Image (cartoon, rainbow, N blue to C red; front, top):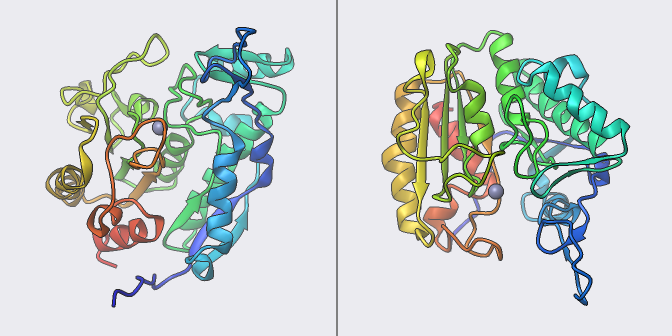
Length: 315
Ligand SMILES: [Zn+2]
């Protein structure tokens, strides 16, 4: 009989219900448009319901006994400038002041969105600070709106602030010399990569994603294997584009043959996982990569993700 793995340490989860106040509206898919002849308009795919179920799983699901809950707090604007430009942050503040704005396709800053975005960034920073202060080994920030498409100078793909990038920067500023990012969302973590793409900071960004390529001016990056970083950042970005239907074996192969060896060679002091849930075969929008088997799930479920992190750090 198989037994569930159990972590040695509690999992510290950071959360604040204020993130639910970011409303993304309805329309045709993520357009926000009502053509006037439909009986049913769709919710934007990035809506509060998806995170509500993640919350309930963590609160009442099988790993709930291992979780220690921590409140999130809002970030202050100066903290955002470690990753984003002042001009971009001013644009967001202005959009909020004016009652909202569509920043790019599908990405709506509505009343309440800016406060939620600040809360998300601050909650992620709190999770990182918890680790940096030696209060735990593994922390999870359960947050939305998401952040990994947000670039230093622009919003993209439902993302306003790059929470992972801000957390990486906090780790660097606190004395971590080498930080790795592993992004398993089915879309390219272009914003996080862009933030460190030409930098001399020792940050290795790795992204496994569907090979969707660029999707317009807000997302000029292709996510292809030849995007390796530039200048002093050359060699510190690893893109692993995977075709639709890659499935479990392909995903496990990419992890064991590319990601794990790269991390072992890089020897980071800190790993930041970007845990988008949309590469699941059960995701209605994408049906892309994984997974049915225990082996592939080990790269996906939260509990086992943490086990991998512990393995990589040899405990
Ligand atoms: Zn995604």
